[in-house]
Amino acid sequence: MNITIDYTSDLPMYEQIKACIKSNILCGKLQSNDTLPSVRQLAKELNVSTITTKRSYTDLEHEGLIYTVSGKGTFVNTVDVSKLLLERKDKLIKEFKNMTREIIEAGVTKETLMEIIQTI
Image (cartoon, rainbow, N blue to C red; front, side, top):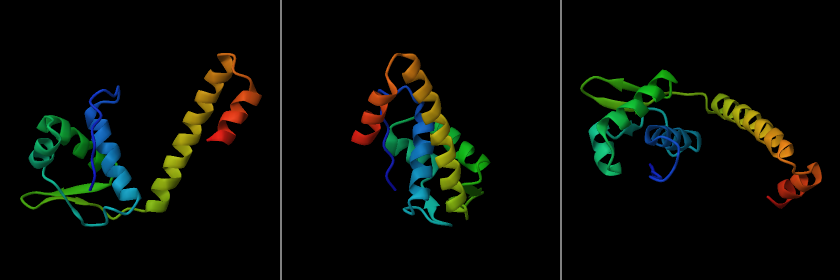
């Protein structure tokens, strides 16, 4: 599992950790019932507070992506990856629409915007 933290990012560290774990689940690097590092172990590896990693794990548990067994550890839950990918796609499209509106309001023409999209 690969988790990287950008200490200069505006995104809180717990959100970055959560996003990395979620991404690892979606791409198949983490599969159902795989063991995650303990909160303390992950905090030490990433050089962050245990409170930060605990917040990430708590949020992921609330989303149903992971589960914790007392005395055993934290594990990847059985999830419907296609449903998660669809939710992610819908969220990204919504964000894209909002950003596109802001770009057009800032004076960028639709033609320029289309050129940018085609370049990407």
